[in-house]
Length: 293
Image (cartoon, rainbow, N blue to C red; front, side, top):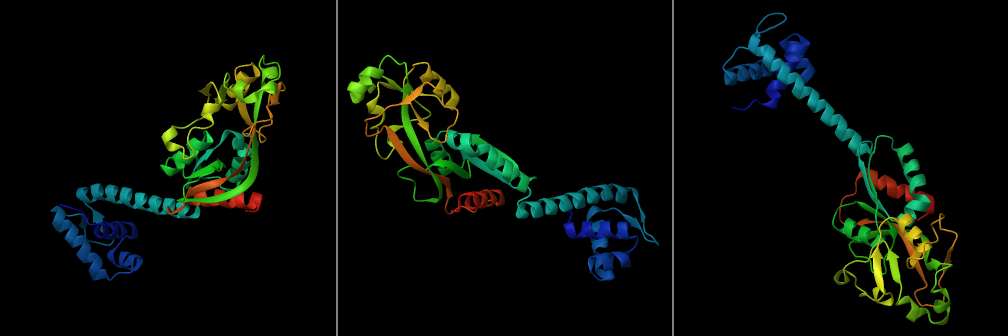
């Protein structure tokens, strides 16, 4: 046995309006259609729900069904209201991954501005290594990625470049290998570890593993402040973005190598053929407004 929603709606209207004719007006139905819906409902349940009168009186079975009807009608109203807010972007969720450098320079300002414009929007925001963001957006873990654009971005991404970034290879000024670096930087780097946020599996990197081979080893440390602190203490070298402002005072650039500095565009990207949430569209519009892209 299954209760039909239109019959429940008619039953609820009769009780709430206090009669069949007023319920019919409210539902924009004929009175006979409302009466037939209640009769069908009573027949299906095998119980009298209303004692006919002016107004109709609920039976014990009718009282129990009214509680169910009110719950159903309330849930319907709440669901429709939630859907309306989702459509407007009010109850959407911003699913975003920021690179550490982009977060350091713009994260707080962007999210502050966005939250003030969209106070009911939920946040699912993480800070992750830039290449890991590419994989995460590809796999649907985050709707939007905001960070450096790789040399070979997947063609299924829609990309909005916002500004440029330069990453400079740096070392502690008092590192014992500084003099050797000046004489023979390439050979000296092969004795030092690169402290970086993420170097992916070689099979997933289109250009191969060239950068990894330039160093003695790779230390993957996802937290930017920890990377900077390790290098400031003389534990290897690292790339530092010009977006970062809290660089330890004793870090100095390593010059004279083809990869001493890496220039990248930084932007927002997302899956081209996936429908975008209202929150995602509003964040993208905010970035376009801010950087004129």
